[in-house]
Amino acid sequence: MTERYRLIGSTASPYAIKLRALLRYRRIPFDWVIMTRALRKQTRHLRPNLIPVLQYPDGTFHGETTTLAYDLEARHSQRSVIPEDKAVAFVCDLLEDLADEWAVKPLFLYRWWDAEDQDYVSRWAGEEWSTSDAEPGSAEEIEQFRRRQISRMPILGATAENKPLLEESYHRILAAFEPHVGMTKYLFGSRPSLADFAWFGQLSELATDPTPMQIMRQEAPFTDHWVRRLDDASGVDGAWYPREKALSGMSEALLSIAGELYMPFLAANAQAFANGMERLEINVWGLSYAISPFKYQVKCLGLLRDKFAALDVENQTALKPLLERTGCWAHLIAR
Image (cartoon, rainbow, N blue to C red):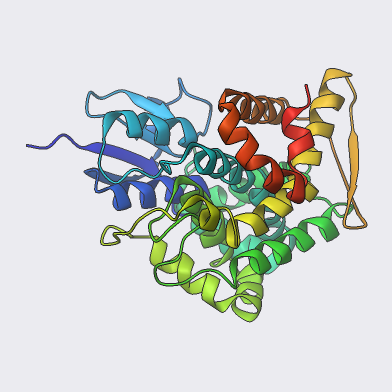
């Protein structure tokens, strides 16, 4: 009998459905299990309330979707989600990080800003995402979850001060996707990559929550369709584009967002953290963004710089014009 994994999560988590879609595409046998109080206790040695958790066939529990995706690459050879071209694979890593660490910010803002979105998501997550000792789905659990998430809004920068920039970034993300997606069109080929699944996770939630769903359907209907199809791409076959095509279109449009917004944010965050500052401020597209420095995103910048430094000269040279054009280059080579 084929060994199976067990993916423990919630459909309200962009990271859980990211990994679920990836496992489906790669045809890796697994069971999808909703997080319960009992499972939360079983996995408490990991980061508290971590979702998703992947239980390996040997019974051990593991977390953090990027780490898991690469470990699955080592354990299973079929239907890889990492482009074969090393330069393209680096861009894949950068755009996955952009999705995981920035796109979640407008998602969090929309989820917990207006009462309609709060009510919708807290009822949904209160059934599936057990974070307290209250009965799952009960009024008490729903209210506790809502309060917990609202209390975390400043941590993710989902504040009135930052709202205009977070909303603008969502509109620009949709504009980057909409002209390029299609039935067999992904970031780097006619097959999806790790970055595609990271974007699927965030955009799928945005396509479900009331306010951002309306925006997506008005501004980016083909992106909405693309997201729904990527939930189960187990029947998709395809190939990676040649480098020039892979690094144009949608990937270049998203790299521009990274270079104008995300990389400057990561650099400012790292500097503020190193200097012991309590607050960092940046201005992008004429809009301000202020937040307390976050240690994990110092690590994100370090990892991106390390991955870029690990590329050989040919691949770095090939990427330089694109990374300079999109504003990413200076932040990747700085130390």
